[in-house]
Image (cartoon, rainbow, N blue to C red; front, side):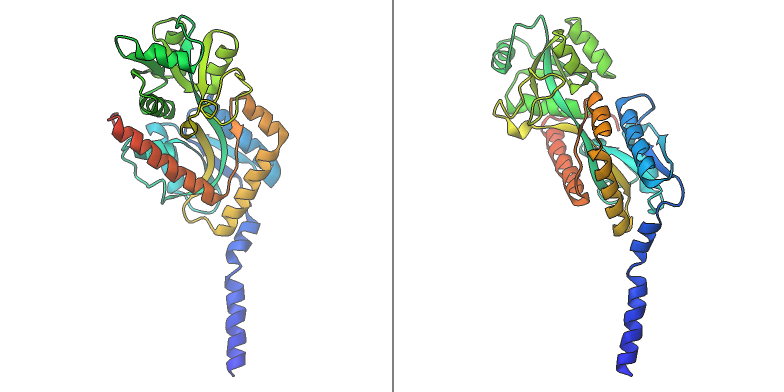
Length: 324
């Protein structure tokens, strides 16, 4: 009798345990929505569409990009955090998963609890450049020039509280540079004033600034990466300059709502790996200044926590406040 009951219980358990795997195998039976929490036309939107196009080819179902801009990406993230965890609503997550927390934004969800990291996708590195009227050629001459100025040297960035601004503050404080930020409403405005000689220093991501360095319109001081960028190969890395702790990039990754079945997370992670190995995908992302990455779900979660802690410290130490 005991053996019979044991066999029945084992059989029942066997029927229950694979259910998540069965659901993962059945996915997708309908189109998948990829929420991009930015407006159409920008680099983030372009990245989302490259990922969606390749995923469509791999899974045999249409992956539709849905732009949900607003609230410093909070609107788009909230839509995914509240979505059914069935794999049909995904998010192109970004650095704001960390910086929004660091800046104290009020959010109707917790990025670390209500969203499921699946895989990192790509990074775009920060860099520092100066206008051609600034009499410097490298980091040593730049640091010396900055610290002999009678007033604080202004550095332009594309917005107060965004990732390049926070890295600029980290770079400034790490090197004890006599600098202060000037925030703009976007990279184009910041670039215009640096190119026009109104502000001497620019902190931005590698595109479009790297192209202007290569064209000789700006002088590159350093890039916050481990390896030199093919976009502006003359610019030394922070590692070369002896500042490995300053490696920094705005990141993107594939994210779903919390509660996704583990088997489905694993399948989506594998798909992401396939997408990022594709040579055409790598080439398209390189044109956007992006370096493909890829990771395990746990490594992505660890990265979000690291970036949250890192930028929270920078915000606190520099007393950065923005309207929330």
